[in-house]
Image (cartoon, rainbow, N blue to C red):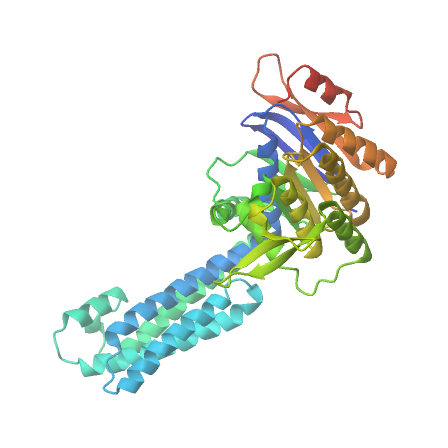
Length: 440
């Protein structure tokens, strides 16, 4: 199993943080000491690195689709065939081409299909352009002049319409080839600056980029010499900042963490079959909540998660108790195949809204996720019951060596910059800070 070391220095409230990501790592500290900041940026760089090639392809595909949209827009001005049926066929073709191309935006393996759609669309538009220019030949036409100006063609430079259209096709193909060359070069170079540009756009990051951040996998740094490496044994990070992320679709599109969680709760991994360990853990959670979580379609064919209790009561997840939501997202992630040895699961205050007994049960689930499935877990906690339960259960399950505690301490008295200090397996320092009232 790979070992990871996450470092973030001199960023906002964080003066220094060097934190191992192996087993279960618990962060404690006052509000504003940087715990959530650590989780957010770890989420960004793990998922960004894992999906960098995919994001670059999506950028390329989006630019191709924008060109197809221009053809769709322009064809309406030149769809002047005398035959009504031909005009309808042209309109249908462009709608279908655009719709088909949008299906190819998510998978780099579809790049040939995307290019084929582009070539067919360019050819269809060029035929229509030829017909239009022949019909309007010799006429002074403001619509024609606007069209030629928009596509960058000076009619006076060509002696025939065929020459003009050929020049247009050549120019368009050069543009596509340049877009593809740029995409392949960015994919090959994996420059750190481009990486941050991409993830800032994809995750709508508004805050400044840290200068001193890195993630080591088995001693190899992700960021080296202004380049971005690969993570071999970490597929994705899941960050849950509140159980409310499980509720409905309202607001999820504006929160990348919520949207990602709901997508994983709604959609199982392709071809996934649950192992015996997963089935046992899933059943344990069902026993705790006395029910299960099911996916249903509403009247508008939208996905809805429902809690179905053992006695037959069924309610939407958004109407369930907040504590129930905490177990629900773990259950759905388990059943859909997103919790394994290549997963980093990060949770802010997992004890929030939980009954004291359920705090212990939730801690047990976290320990078993790590022990049985080797999930890497990073949490921050303000609750002594959660901290004590994790230590006790990890010891009982013989995985105490996989449990790490870190406490955010001010670099000097009265300062607002914090260093995350390793506590080993001991929780005494954390409990002392609780007693002193330094953790809220």
